[in-house]
Length: 112
Image (cartoon, rainbow, N blue to C red; front, side, top):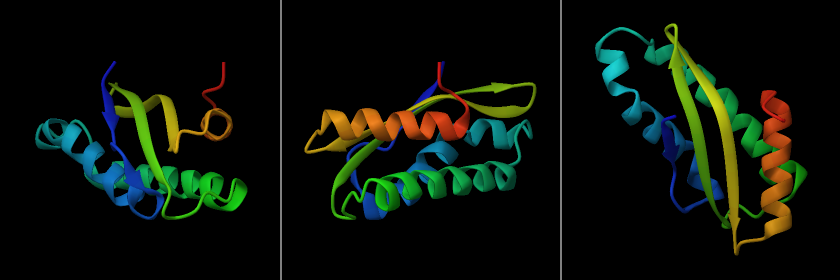
């Protein structure tokens, strides 16, 4: 299963970085017209909003904190599907990492 990572980035900049790494990973699908970049960017915008809501509004993670977003995905039947997600919050706070990951999985319907 393919994976993209933002790498360590401040909360204030994760959204741009996530959009860039996803679009870079899907470049060949865009060229082959398997996926529509506009649709993917809408999905990533919604995902970024959900992540922001959980990180900043729910858990009050400061915007200068460092996070790493790891996204597992598949492209099936011309659709981009998020299979799993993990949000690592550094100064690695295990409780906060587990809670934010659980919340975004709930929001995306990925909980097991």
